Image (cartoon, rainbow, N blue to C red):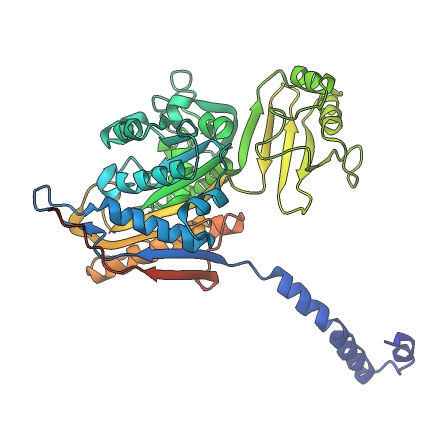
Length: 466
């Protein structure tokens, strides 16, 4: 465009409008490109349904009992649809590897009827074992031991030969916490119980930050009187941290706390408390210079390491980048030093921080939750964690995805539909929590951007006994 010719126009109202029009036309393609780039990404959810998956037993108690064979079929179909693999073994191997320590997060507090159902847990564990994952690398977990015992999950773990743990028994990280100015009495098992009367910190469990490489969360479709749905965000956030009783009933605080605690649990980790300098010196002296135990899970020597005070654009040899950061953390005035790690395609990033105290921790751009499974065999739409089957509906569904926000949006819609159908008062508006989580980058809260793929299997017919 000849801007000099435009500049020769007589400076009048018409000429000014002409210049603005031409300039606007010239930048319109660029604006369209920026708008396309800024359009939020969508979310994908796979829903598989099979009539007859839950049946009422002849004998009391009269609750709907999941049929193990049907649950197994539903899960296999869902995995194939989600991954595009031809069988469940190949599907699992797309999600996890035989080197991963995998934590299966369940919702035990509500019990085995309206919480995570043991039949679904059994199907997931059997699928992982069939995919070649060693049993010693599979851990069932929730926040406390007592609900795990009461729900029969300890017995289930024993039958399957896998581990079982609680966040409280594993302990909590002193230096990884969410700070919120709400005080309340501490519970037994909280990090500062017996030391302080109250605390404004909620610490994330060491089970997640130090032991688990991947998490598979199995949540139930269960109404929550304040958060709207117990679901994926609330379930992982409250199950993986201490000192959370202080938030009960405080809707405005939950809108902020739940997404932040979820992010802390899903993205942060600790490499070691102390001794990093010794381990790094040993790795430097050894031939080959192994990075094992020095970097976040999933990182290897093929990744790119940057230490920005040295050179923000040029990657360094991994051990050299770590050595420079270690020296930087000790340099006066002492302060945290960070190493930025990316894969070669720059699709995933880790920020490894070395603190002067000796703590080495990291934050990953990708979540360690590799799959969310919503146990939607049954939907209880009133009552929270109290068993109220008169306010429950059988859906016979499993839902799979990696977006906790999108899955919770769909669950909240179901709860609202069932509540209205029962001519009860609609649940309070709870989308604000999900929208806040979306703003923090944890998922998609806009229903228009959620792509739901529904697949229906033929009605389940149990094999007839001779």
